[in-house]
Amino acid sequence: MRYVTLALVVLLALVHAELWFGKGGVPYVMELNARLNEQLASNTAGRLRNDQLAAEVRDLKEGLEMVEEKARFELGMVKPDEILVQIAMPKR
Image 1 (tube, helix red, strand yellow):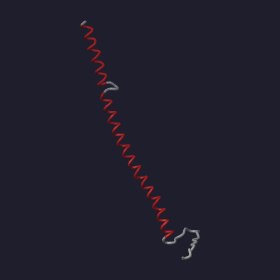
Image 2 (cartoon, rainbow, N blue to C red; image 1 turned 30 degrees about the horizontal axis):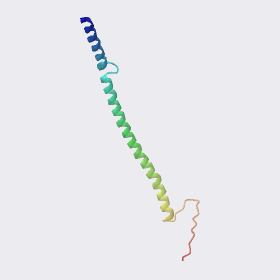
Image 3 (cartoon, rainbow, N blue to C red; image 1 turned 120 degrees about the horizontal axis):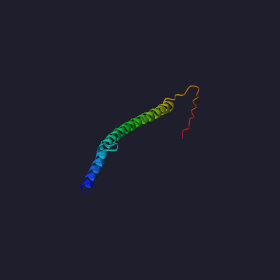
Image 4 (tube, helix red, strand yellow; image 1 turned 135 degrees about the vertical axis):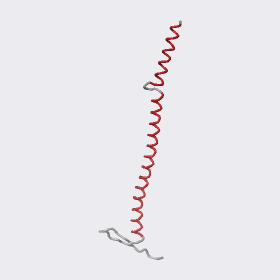
């Protein structure tokens, strides 16, 4: 009976050692969690940077269209090889 108890204690110690120091043990899981947190932070920073760049591109596209629209209607400017036709509406 004493040998059975001793064998069970040794097996329990081996299983416990594998849990703490083995390939899938606690330190490995903690390292993976740290790497996961770093990657999530990196992804968040990248996502913010992408949003900023998308907003900048959108502003540049809309800004050029807005400038062109103002130049055409307020200043009467035309593109090269373009003919401006104005139709005067009769006053009532």
